[in-house]
Length: 308
Image 1 (cartoon, rainbow, N blue to C red):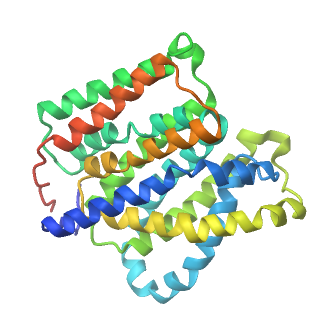
Image 2 (cartoon, rainbow, N blue to C red; image 1 turned 135 degrees about the horizontal axis):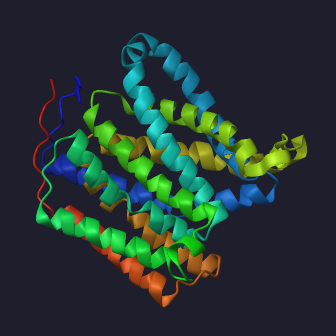
């Protein structure tokens, strides 16, 4: 894998700052489901939610991208790779929160450290220790427990679960490429993510909604506008920018475990506000997935080899 990136090696203070920022930003994402379901209630269902929360940030980034175009055009391929992968991760995660339970979508997404480890091994030439292999085994064991909680794995798998699982895979790949192409500005990768999120949202309209994919009435857009704009511009945009900044400075696996703060916030909020309770088997699966993340962050990480 070729890249012109210099893999950053931040000092202890910079690493602590980036880690804390990733932790806090992901904690905010633990409440991601609240505005999504509120927007859905106003009639912007399924993929229309994707378009609603990504259009305003995309428009906001247009003048920035235009001003930076002489620089951006040199890295279009790299930005497209990161943007398409991370966008797919966020789009599938968003839809998973709508089409399945909050905790199942969140836990399936947070197999990310497992996928990140596998992608980092291939893309970044990171060494995989026995702890990392153990983390992968724990993560997949947790996955099986969660998906089989109400019967056979195949029989209990719904479209929201599939999206939750795919979200972690795509996000893990996106984090690995973000680390690989560390010379890109977070603003450029964020703009690419918003663009590809809108494209993917449009592409999924007919497959998910069928004849109901018609453009929602103006009244629905106006009713959802206050919460949509507040969430997308004041919460989603700065937190995504922060995560992309951290992903350039930390190992993909470490970013994945730090972002598990979202699991805690999502679990508490889903229990208190949505009345969701994990079954004993789902709870056991959650423990295994979180355990996989802890093993990942405790694993020694070799410095990636610079590709030529």
